[in-house]
Each structure stands twice: as structure tokens, then as C-alpha cells.
Image (cartoon, rainbow over the protein chains, first blue to last red):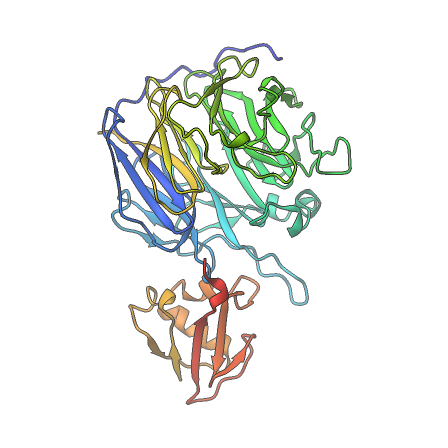
Length: 390
Length: 87
């Protein structure tokens, strides 16, 4: 285990306003609004009903701009944008797309935009998007127009890093987990399924793999440089040299400038294991992390181990883990996808997760107990939390 | 030429189910529609100029799969969302 370092950023005051949970589903988006107690919730009517919404994200820099990554079963991928917190929407004038290939060559076709990340605080109109197949895109005008990040999309190693279409996840290989270092907008990390974790220190002009120490037991190579399957990678905003990832092969931590992942999931109970999709970080305590384990044995059901849904928390950066299952059904067989679990910034921290069975679960006490204020939704793909000022 | 628009694309065409458009090919016809209704084309044609997997285009009831398919004045074009695209 690495030595705990002190946070490099001052700890912000806990949020005190209301919370809105932004829910992306297979058949549209929803907003679940809470009151200040976070006990009472009101669900909106569907937004873009029938659209496949992979991600809906609030711009924390202005507190009112929402972006949605959407497509339908028939229609190609696009991005919708609202500057009034969802009252009105407009489509991006130039959505993310790969460049047209020269005559006679086969070019990449963007299947869907999978991930949206607001840019650095010093770059108010910058957004990044990750796509399936793996591509990185950037907007400099708040999501109206998008261009490919050539340093990644045209990198001579991109094809090797990403493998073929069949090397990705069941609904397509994807680039996700776009993390911007709060100290330096040019320092970025991304995750790819498959591909692994990659880092850029020059604003995306060049990239290098960052996968040492991380298992990839689905590959024949014992310790490959790339080809891994990070499910969700997060940089801690108060300690940006600390990275956590929930990987296909376990839970990991990395302390930069070290470049080796340490498997902290080995300390999870053996009957549960450390496979899962999402990972959530405590906004004020870099040692506290929540995961939602899933069954990764035999044929990979991807449901909770033994059908017993439970969140697990560590409060010492992975040395020990504790189950948090009060309120969850004793048996259930849903999956929580990689972008379907999030936290607020209140004290105590609120946790939010969405299930493939269309439920949204809320904990207002850091996972100690859970309630289900929204059910019977379509399959939940993503959950994000918007802190509102009122 | 008359172009019949399926319901998923009518948010682009101000709810119009039938448009009048010109063009010597399917590609030119779609480009003209996109000039009038920005964003329309990319939802049904990808960045490599391929007609998207679950979109079918018929000229006078005959299917075509290429933007270079020629058009004649008086043709009727149907843009169809295939059953296979349902989710």
C-alpha cells in the first residue's frame, strides 16, 4: 500500500443546495429533483423519449448548461444542449464524427457518443466527449460544434491500442473516463474498453499507456502494455496525483508519479470479489471510495454476487472494505453500469445509483442506508449529480 | 421529386411528412434537404457517406444503398426506418 499523502487542494465547504439526479436511460433522460433534506424526490417526465441516452451531464462552471449524448435505434449519434437546465434543447450544429477517409480507404464510423466531460475550470466553453468506437472529441464552444482530438484519433498506435471492433464491450468498444487534472488543463487521462488507461501531458497531442500492474487476464499476454479493460477511472479532485479504477480485473489505485497500479480490491471479501463497473470517490476524503461489486465468475452474469445487491466502501484507500446494503432487496438481479453511480458534495455525502432494471437508489448518509425514489424506468445507463444553488 | 419522411426525422422538417427536393443523385437530394433542415443528413448518413444500417431508401419503391443512385424528375423517394432498428 502506498503512503497516504495530504490533499493538495483545500477542502471545499460541503454543498448546501438541492440536488438533481441526471438519469440517462435506454429510452430517454429523466431528472430526479430532491429537496434540501434529500428525502423527497420528484421525477420529471422523459426528455427525448425513445432516444438512447448514454450520458447527461451538467456544466458545473455555469450551473445551467446540460449536454446529452444521444442516438436512436435508427438515427445516428448526436449531442443535445440546453442552456436553461432542460427547459429547451438544441442539437449540436456539428456533432462528434470521425473524418471522412480518403477515397478507397475505410474510415471510422461513430456509433454513439458514450461519455461527456466538462473541460478545465479555466476553459469555460471546453467539453470533451468519448465515443464508440474509441474516439476523443473536443468542443470549444460549449458543445455546439465538435472536432476530433487528432493526437488521439489519428495516433499511429490508436489501432493497436484499441484492437478491433470485436475487442470491445458487448455494445461496442468505447472511450470513457475522461479526467482533466484540476492543476493543468493539458494533463488528461482517459480509459478505453478495451485499450486501457492512457495519459496525455500536452493537451491531447500525444498519449501513452498507463497500465503497469493492472491485470488483463482475458488476454494471452501476461503483462501487456495495453489492451486492458478499465470500467471506470477517476482522479481525485483534491489529490490529483491519486487515481482509482474499477477494472474488469479488479479495483486499483495509482499514486503518481508512480506508474504502477496497486490492486486494492484483493482486500474485498473473497466470496464477493472485486469485479464491478462503477467507482465513486468521496469529494472531501481521498481515502474513501465506494464500489458496487458484480458477479464476474464463469459466464459473467454481471449481477450482484449471489443476487445480493450491496455497495462496498473503503475509508482507508483500500486496506479494508465494508458492505453497505441496508435498504436494498435481499435478492435482486440487476446490474449497475459504469456511469450509473455518482455522489453529491453534501455532508454527509449522498450516493446515487441506477440499475438495469430501471430503479434509482439514493443514500443520503454515505451508503449507510438506501431508498428507491424512482422505479419502473427504462434500463438506466448513466447517473450524474447536479448541485443546484437553491 | 417527392421525398417521404419517416416520423423519427420530422423533428427536423417542421413536422412535414413529404418534402419537395431536387438533385441528380440521392446524395445531392439529401444535401439539399440538409441545407434546409441542418442536421438531417448526419442522422441517416454516416461520416463515410454510408447510409446508416437501419435506414432504407427506396426510389419508386426500389431499394438503393448508395448515395450515388441516380434520380429523375418525378421520382418518389421513401426514407424508411427499418424494423431492425427498434430498441
